[in-house]
Image (cartoon, rainbow, N blue to C red; front, side, top):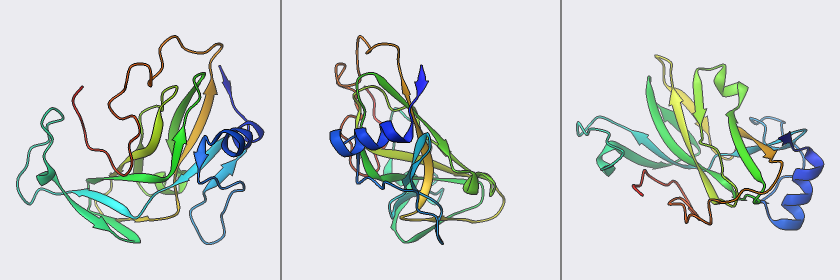
Length: 185
């Protein structure tokens, strides 16, 4: 397996629509960086957040997920309460090639503030906006800045195309737009 370079990412984004909208150079001035880097792509978080709350004493159950578990906010800066959690999504839409697996890592700027970003791997031939899980592990409120970098995607090319892709198995999160909540098969 090889990690794909900026040249490959640029070509796949511009010629094959792998990332839309695509930012060809890394933007850094006055913002948490986003755009193309040497071996990855730093994606931006939208301004739509689902912030978990215990106001209604809801219980989190991935098999029967309830909207009572969170509050929706459309804001330029999201405040995640101490030791709490939010969901958001990327601005970018991804279309993953059949021979590629994509791994996501949180940005160090946020990680050094105790903010952990989690995204499960983007499987071959998956398409959509990526739902991002954001944890504030600190005892303090934390700010997340919309329209700025939140995580970096690394593109790994397999030694051959997979036998069964996400599209082949009609994955439950295929084509998602916005923030997708947990779904059962």
